[in-house]
Length: 127
Image 1 (cartoon, helix red, strand yellow):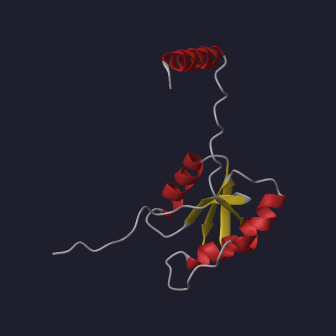
Image 2 (tube, rainbow, N blue to C red):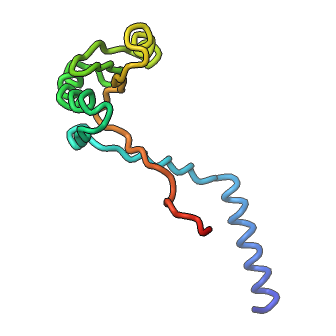
Image 3 (spheres, helix red, strand yellow):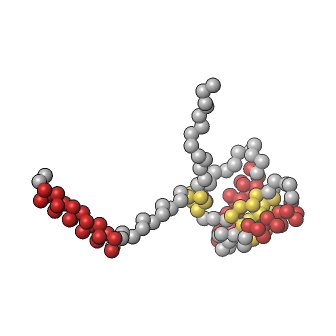
């Protein structure tokens, strides 16, 4: 490239930079976190401590959603819905008052459940 071509290229780059400073591009939207529809949720293994409660929740979630409880918190003991609460602290308070130390399911009623993933690979270190 000759001297004139370099000057023209630098001028164009500067003009583009100035234009971008005056007209910045809109920010990219954040990616949606992965979710799963409640109908695709798996039953718990019978050996799990909360298998009874989780499997009972799976039988009740359609009714809870139909009654308009999405986003609220359900407290389940064995195969009984103890209550549905607006906030986690309200549900946790009832748990502490009546069932402290006992296994219960305290779960937010959602049509689409977030998919929670563990981090990274599990590798053994060489000794």
